[in-house]
Every structure is written in C-alpha cells, then in structure tokens.
Length: 199
Image (cartoon, rainbow, N blue to C red; front, side, top):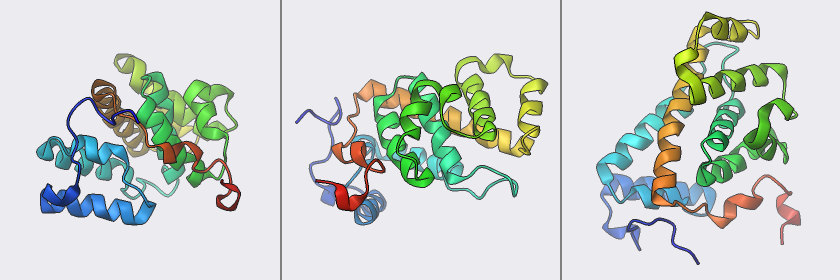
C-alpha cells in the first residue's frame, strides 16, 4: 500500500499527546477507521490542534440564520472548492460525507467536476457560485455577489460562513497536496451503495 503522507506518521497513537490521541480514538470509534488526515497532521501537534479547532469552528457551528447552511451544504462547499483546487484527499473524503448527508450517491462527483450541471437546488448553486468566487477570484467579490445570496434567503452572516469554509479548505487542500495525503480506501464507497449491498 502507498504511504499516506510523504512526512512521517505515527505507527501507533500511544505515543501521541493525550488530547490528540483521544480525538483520534474518538473518530475511530465513531467511523470504524482513522481518516488519514488525523495521522498525517499529527506530525506537528500544535498545527493539528489549530487546524481542527478552526475546522470545528466553521463546520460544526450552528447556522447563522434559520435558513443558514445545512451540514450537507457545508460539505458541498468543501467538495466543490476542493475539486477546483485539485485536492484528491478532500474531494474523496468529504465527498463521502456529502453523499451520506444528502442521501444522494451521485452528488459529490457532480459538484466536484461542475456544480452548475449538478442535480442540486438553485439555492445550492448560488451558494457554490459564491464559494467558487471566494476560491478562485476573491478580489472581485462585490455587493452583487451578496445580493445573489440574499435572493435565496441567505444572510451576510451565511456569506461569511461560505467564505470561511472555502478559505479554510483552501489551506487544507494545499497541505493535503503538499504532503501527498492519501484518502482512505473506505471513503470511496461510503454513501454510494447501501451498507447491506457492500461486498
């Protein structure tokens, strides 16, 4: 099997700082495996902590408004912008989470390639249009971009959420590409076929 990172990764969680070990074991208990991002980033414990603190702040926070971003829409932003940044790890890993949240086995592949052709709602296309502008041409964001979101009931605080997720995963994409982070094999089938039909 190919290495999961070009940098050293722990062969056991036993020697890791207590807080990092507990986080990794908690994820393993919940998902049944350890996503490689946790092992790859454990190479630098302080950066691991900072990375996951900001991840949790933008991905797990309560919506900014009653019409704010759903968990599925947050993952949709990650997959779409990670596709633009050509980040294999984030497209595969977050594509799996997106398929599960949206209960749509095709959606992750669609938005990773071209969200405007995807089977998603006009609201979601507007969210992803905004995210892609943050991703690819943030200097050109103006009032009209915020108005396009408001037309779908999204607030300026929701726009901040979209931008923060996009910006954070811009960092994540680049670190994953730098380290040659390999997606776990488990991610590829998640959310594509019912559990009972898996071989």
